[in-house]
Amino acid sequence: MPDVHSLVNDFVIKLKKRKIEGSKATAKQTVELLRSFISQQRLPNSNQAAALIEAVRAVGENLIAANPVELAVGNVVRRVLHIIREEDLSLATAAVGGISLADESDDDDFEQDDHPVLSATAVAAAARSSLRPPSLQTLLEDAPHAAAAPHPSSSGGDSEGKSKSADKNSVTRKLKHNVIEAVNELVQEISTCHEQIAEQAVEHIHQNEVILTLGSSRTVMEFLFAAKEKKRTFRVFVAEGAPRYQGHALAKELAARGLQTTVITDSAVFAMISRVNMVIVGAHAVMANGGVIAPVGLNMVALAAQRHAVPFVVLAGVHKLCPQYPHNPEVLLNELKSPSELLDFGEFSDCLDFASGSGSPLLHVVNPAFDYVPPNLVSLFITDTGGHNPSYMYRLIADYYSADDVVVKRKSAS
Image (cartoon, rainbow, N blue to C red; front, top):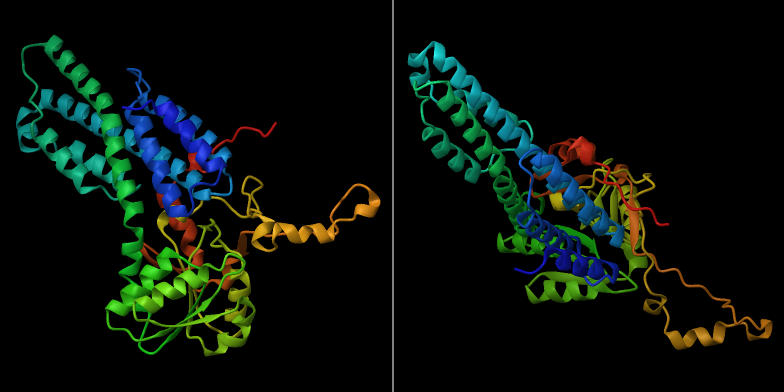
């Protein structure tokens, strides 16, 4: 097995060099890296959860600092920290319930025979459900362990003490196993988010509608394909998404799948929006207030949609939900891309002021990557858990993140 520290360093280099594109790919590789890191951790006999949280938090600080603009990295780190806290709480609750059952058995063996494991299982399930629904894997694992729990013997206090000590050790050893199983579920959630969102397409796209989108989004593409497979007939306007013109690639994919597609310039959005029934776009990240960090140009589209009362729908996987607000100074809302996407490098030579001797350019190029779309311009979010209003985003975030992990400390830039 490769050294986990080498894997972390390699991933940090990839993030710094922007070699990973897309929130889904970044989130998936981040959670897979954290899974490998957790599996190779040697935990102490006591305070295992605290030790594991500190180790994951330290790695998360390095990953977030490598590319602060890619908010999916921080989201995944916080989700994993939440999983550790949740599994530790579940095991602790189950252990307390088990001890209570053992104490009650001293007074009434008959009652214990009637209810051998119900209390511990029920309390653990209640604690888990208050944070997130239990997985089928967890339910299947808990049942055999509970059913096989031996009844306390009457041989004496020493055997009872050893039994309780063994139960406690088994609970602590189970923490890492349960965390890895829950992280596996997170990997599966991220891998299937496109399919989960696409399944809802037929509920939102109707016959003979005109859909507008901008640039290229894999989530939007799968969403439109799913509606086409359900025999929906509709037309798509694709704004080209300058300066990278990713809309051209999306238009080719849609046309190849038999969808009526029209490519328009970004500047033509306002002129064409009156013919549109719905705007469907992807997102880079969804903030805690329901605002969206999206590819540049989408704020213009959202304003045009609001002016003509056209629904503005955002597709985003749950891994894009960020428990931070756009005014938070730790959130870098934009990234400047290379000027060469706008102008060829040779063209700059004509814009240099050689008379001054410094050769300072008279022409400057600003090429931002993202826009911020405020929540009042968004009509609906469609995630892999269903459709939600912007005002409901904070509730979803509360379900997926712990309050203690909302702010992950970063190393100072000094």
